[in-house]
Length: 253
Length: 320
Image (cartoon, rainbow over all chains, first blue to last red; front, side, top):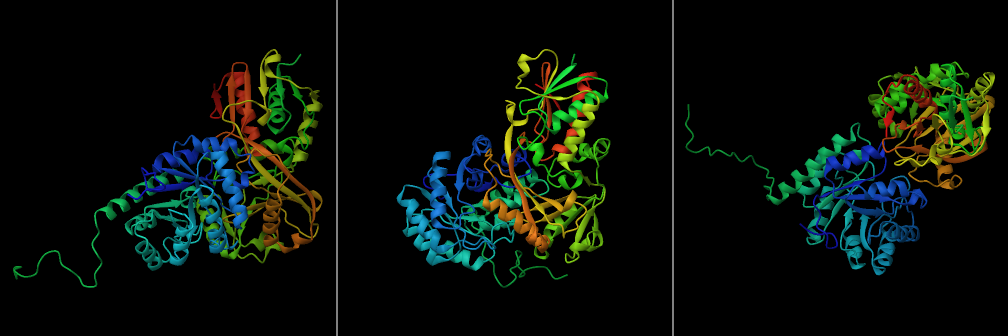
């Protein structure tokens, strides 16, 4: 398994911590999923979210602070520095939003912020598109992990551009990659792992499910299935039917 | 001589006083700020008595016990029983489908049939059994009802330790209870006399859900953000933009309304967002009403009173 800045995760599942009906349900969802990483947003809490953050720390998983809701490199850099203080980690999920409606990443602001933060010793997890050129530039900027989107944040559409994601995976075979955003169903998560991605990050699909705890368990099982399947070297799809029993020699009745 | 001392004159403390007085006990009410006002989160509430809509995200106990609230309040203050109207913008129609699935008490409706001003919204849900009240009027009416029985709010700083006899501590976040956190909420009040909504309207949105509660005199309460923060700073521009934009999307005439108030405060909540009566010896803590102050105060008061008078342990009672 590829590692994330030297850290090997117990489970390829990363869960967000927003939008749950209550912190108690959030905790139950984490327990049920076996997730190894919790992402947490600082921005809206205005520096006064201590009660909630200590609850996140109590989950006993690694914390990946994010810069959710930042619309410029400058905002994202400021938020990242604050996150480092609060959570005492160099990990930062870098999100620079380019469009308020689609929440798609701003590639230029992202690269700019990634350069600044990497130079400051942050271990950056950039939320990016499946664009290979941008991916290369992010790696040049010092990122050692990539977080390509599956589909727009909160859309639940799954892996929207499978061709692009496959190409990205093939282009940088040694770079750990997390599919972030757009995962709506456990099958999407399994799909990502089967395609060779190293982990998935999701939030809404669990937090807004009718039963978040049960959905979290389903995702935990799905990423296990996907990772096992990938490791087991899946067959290649083919155009023709290929009977598993040979026809020759079969008795004609 | 008081039978019991209540510290905290917010909706929880006052309703507890009312319930105890109804059962023939004589409570004394202390609050360091005197009668309710902008210093307490009860002041900033929306006043929706919407157990079914809340049940879409809240635990089932909120729906079950919250169902008593409208009747309990109606004995004290005017309660409008016109249900809740739930709508979504066309592109968020999936939210409406989901909400309908999670809220069995609804009936599909054409919003314009219930609220002619919203005829431009094509699909909606009506939850007929829900109600609303004006929170500040309700607090005033509660105080008047207590005062008619000779019970007044005394302005005094108090700690349970310094008081003899049974105590109800309903101070919200001022009470040092483990596991209690503040959840920030921001709201606005608009004066928009051209708008004629007669019942609470919820606008579903994946990121910026909004509810609007009509009040007397062309006033509308827009609420509310829900942020995991203990900051009591004034409402942020971002939150104001979100609330106002959502109101504008619901009915563009809100753009001409005047902003009468922009408020922010903290809701006290436990980890499960369910209110509790925490029993610690002779002190009962009534706390953690989260966004359900008016919805849950009657049930919480009732369970506290049942415990005090007959040692009945309702589901909100936690013996510490």
